[in-house]
Image (cartoon, rainbow, N blue to C red):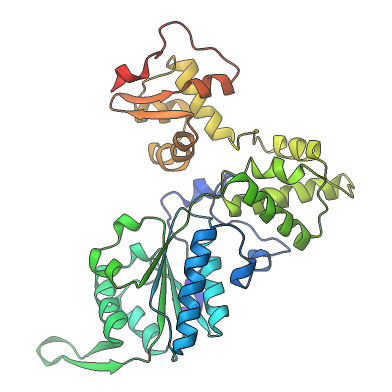
Length: 360
């Protein structure tokens, strides 16, 4: 695989197909006239949200510029869609250096990584998305490159093989991961700055949506950005995707200004409700409540009831449902909370998991 193709390699084939079909998935899909690159800010000041992280990163970059040396390696950790790739691009832009983009799954062998490292120029940024999925041999090669700025190239095979050390110019690795816990400790220790991205509050998403609407040439009435933000699951990528669907609605219905009711109607067409739950989320809650009387219910039974793989239910639906208090994971299985019953317009029947504490 060519180096230029690394940034378009699929990150996780196990659930990518299911994720790509969901409107509220944080994985990028589809081809749009206005690309994600055009919606992304190019300077740190224009990056909306994550104020503490921005302040830390600004200080980190300012110090590197004053010392006139490439900054230490950076690790960006957090759920998908929160802006890790955008921040990597901003860092390179702020430093005024080129950026090389690849991903953990795209690097199949240590030699793939060695060829990339040996072609880097002084000060260049190497961005490795899903860095926790690097092969073990590539990880060990990266340890030395990040710390000593050299790679050992093996020449020949068998007893006659020899190692030739190549000195590398000083560069900066930016690693992005959605699963920081899967990073080996030696690799994690070599990053001089670790940034943790959190889900966005509604107020910050509103500002982001208003900015993206200006880029798309879409005029939002007062309250429209709020309706979009509360359905975006705290994730900028989802917010921008929903905004595009609302733009489609406005174009088809010849709307000059998008009002809050237009947002509700447009997203209702895509089965996205006021809390950002989509068809699959609602199906999971309905199965727990209507078929299992609110739970507890095992994952396999639940996945069979909604007609999805257990891994899909566990990795795609459950994190948001648990985070927003619609569902609880207990030793005996999944349980719907009172918030889930109310969201579906139902009242929990007498004795149906009324005292959740008894489930633990």
